[in-house]
Length: 317
Image (tube, rainbow, N blue to C red; front, side, top):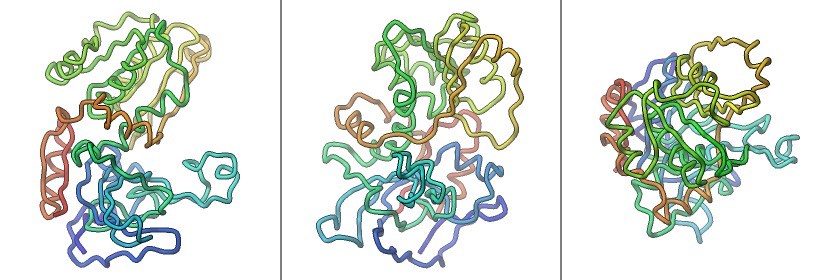
């Protein structure tokens, strides 16, 4: 089997990997397509000491499992939980104490011909959702997690800091709430993608300080965090969507004085994400920058690592 293998922060293409055999409760999926995301890039930089096949945004076809699911097109939730720990028993499987995470923690990922996941993690892709669009299910779900954690009201002023891959999806999902939304970034052409959907955009100088109820930071850099923090009025909510390979420093006293609520936000619900795609309420086509076959995966990563690049897809066939 072919795959992109990460070890000691070095990525390599291998064509001698064993085809995975699914354990009880799991199925084998033949991967059709997968997307490179910032977490993959941060893993190469040392965000987490992972060894194995990278990749967690994918669409595939069930090849081995219960007969009624064979040849079905699926996407998959990336956290494989034990079902027995306190978090699992209280309905929080994404924080399972014994979880493995596809392409991130102790589980080979999607940048390969095949992967395995528990059947309960998989979601059928609606027939009217193209494979290109379905590849974005996981990051759309991550964007929707914000609305699982806090209630966004039409009367609230909301700021999204960052115009990259995830920032674009977060802005689109938040816009559906009817809130007073502003998305800021550094790239005119990226912001234009959002403007075409009726979303207000601007650069950092468009942000009026201490005027927003909610700010979402998805730049992955300290300056983005600082802007999001400064934009909040007292008792505002700061949502962090970025994973950092390095350390983040900030003025903790200012958070205390203004009674800012700081929320980390990670994986989200797949069913609503697929529903938005089926209803064509989210545009992902404009986010696709390039495509590479799996055999050219190292070149694909070099492309994805360039500043300002949007979604790079890997095609397995």
